[in-house]
Picture 1 (cartoon, helix red, strand yellow):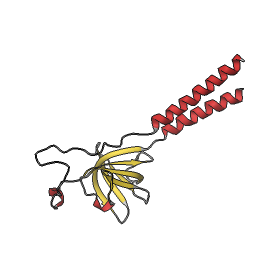
Picture 2 (cartoon, one colour; picture 1 turned 60 degrees about the vertical axis):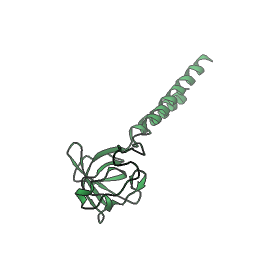
Picture 3 (cartoon, one colour; picture 1 turned 30 degrees about the horizontal axis):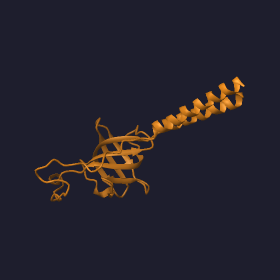
Picture 4 (cartoon, one colour; picture 1 turned 135 degrees about the vertical axis):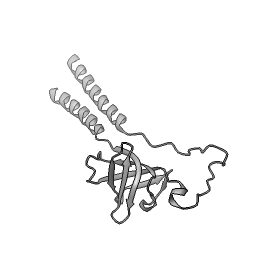
Length: 161
C-alpha cells in the first residue's frame, strides 16, 4: 500500500515539475538578423540585448505566414520563444519560434508601403489573428493535481476496506 501511495505521489510530482519546464518568451525589437550565422539579435523591452540562434526547426511567422530570417529588419517588433531563458547576453539561445508582431514602417526601410485589403484608409486596422499567448503549463499542472487526488482517493479507499 505504501508503495502504491508513493508511486501516486511521485507521478503527481513528475507532472507538476514537468509543467515548470515551459518555454520562455522574450519580446523586443530586432537589432540585427544574420542569415550567414543564423542569428537574430533583439533589444528586449527592458533594454537588454539578447541573441538567438535559428535552426531548421525554428518557425518565423507573421500573422500565420512563414517569414524568412533575412526579412526581419531592424526595429521590427518580435516575440521569441525558446526552451530556456536567456541569461548571458554573449551566449546565444536556440529559438524555437519567432512571432513577428509588427514589421517596420516603409519609411524606415526605404521601400514603398504595400496596399492592405484589411481596412480602408479611413478605418482602424482590424487584427485577423489573436496573439498566441497560451501555454500548456496549466493543463500539465492540472494533470499533476489530478494524479495526486487519485492517489489520495486510493489510499482512503484501501484504508476503509
